[in-house]
Image (cartoon, rainbow, N blue to C red):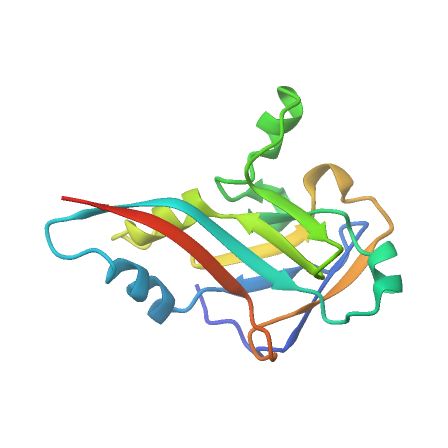
Length: 168
């Protein structure tokens, strides 16, 4: 993958397959995850929640924001990261641990990306992309919704809460 150009402090997600935001986890971030596990040990990510803040705390904008965001490896083909198994969720009428919903009280979206980060940590061949795209939830992409997101250059960057177990 070519590096993303023009990093920005704002990202946008828009319905009708409009604007989506691509994020790229730094190599330093991935290496810091790998460094958690000493040589000869294995690490298991129990839970990894990513938080993405809205760019504004104007609560009236929450009414036009998507209720849920999806996280994709390839947004144009709606190929989701492993945690966002929206076809499974829809077929079996169940709710995923993934979440992706807007927390209207605190003004952020939260997504459980445990499987994605687990794959990324153990990927030695570069097969798992460090890029992901935040877009409309798979079955809501035709909704007339839009949201501005606060990204890494902002005061409150995208953040992760990670719980893990070291084995060995």
